[in-house]
Length: 60
Image (spheres, one colour):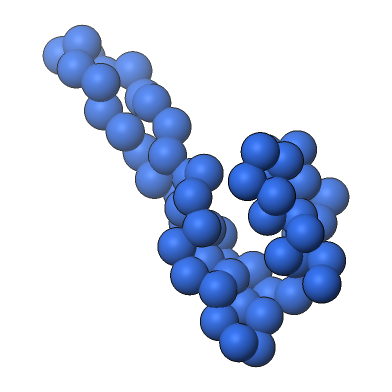
């Protein structure tokens, strides 16, 4: 997970990359984008975001 941008109004864009098994055996990566407003999805992404302390940004 990586924070792409935090706007002044509290909207945050997070990008999550995770490996996907492919038929060719290459290490493809799929990206998942979250657009969060302040106080949104705290329970949903807290456990994913612990290492980056994103939960602190969301709760503020």
